[in-house]
Amino acid sequence: MRELFGWIETGQVKPVIDAVFPLQDGIAAIKKVTGRNVMGKVIVKP
Image (cartoon, rainbow, N blue to C red):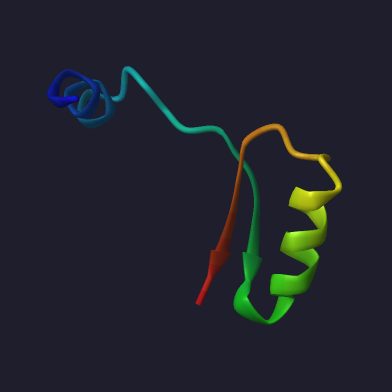
């Protein structure tokens, strides 16, 4: 696990972010995930 965090810190591993939604669009974010139309992480920001 420490090795993985090291890779993240050095930029060797980068998460793929598919979409970022504001909190007020949380329902749209859930629909995107449940619709299986995602190629990475879906983030909901407060």
